Length: 343
Image (cartoon, rainbow, N blue to C red; front, side, top):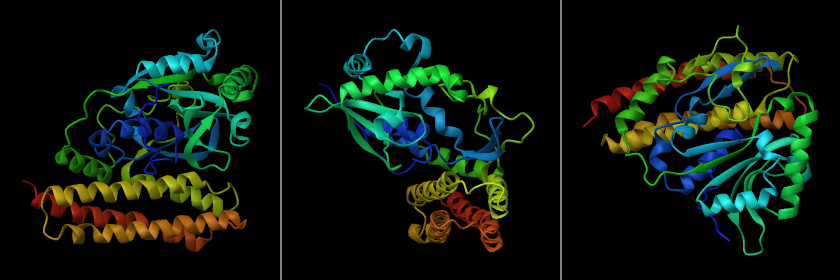
């Protein structure tokens, strides 16, 4: 029975497809790789969900060029034999596995098909998993082998018969971390924050790349602009305006990701402030820290409103509308300090 190192991280968990590989990355101690990424944002639309803006990290799938990633097609999965035997063979190779499973059968909740990360087995023979449980908490879990095999088979059946699920072409992705981390580069972090302010995509990024389970290009809305960086505020604000008018429900995961991103930017600024030996480094990031707290209060207010069945108000939209200018001013001031403190 082999178990691979895992960190059930709380830094990026608004999108399972980004959160799960990151648990393997950080479990393997590859923190510098992470510190260089998840600074930039993008937003786009899908033809299958035309009323929604999708807020995301361009780096959600950057792990596929860092970890040794390999996918198993839906067709090939039908002849794998018991899923648990496949997983144990991968653990012996030092590989984690992300698997599309029938979540309702496993957890009793969630979308029909949801991915889970497997990292080993416990002393009782149950499989160690990370993902969203029946209460939508991102957490560690264990599953019995028979339940896993059944959920895998049930999931494959659903993909053959149910609506958009037929688009899923791959159902397993295996991951093996490299032996060494990237060296930490403060200059790289500085450049990523500059790109965020300039609304510039990361070098080589293409929005159609990424989704390993099917080709995002077949669902990307061709006429909607793809926004980057601080300009993504416009799409979040537009979503809140639509929700305030009753046209769409509030997309809480979008707001969670927005807040999550601000925490990540605060952490990156801290690395720069201390790494470049700024005078009073805590003070250099204090203003942005207060901004993160305000964004968190806004997020929690929206969450409470959802629970109570209330729509956002015009005041809510206006409050959010002020975040873009405030964040821009704070980041510009910080970057000026960080540039002067460069060694």
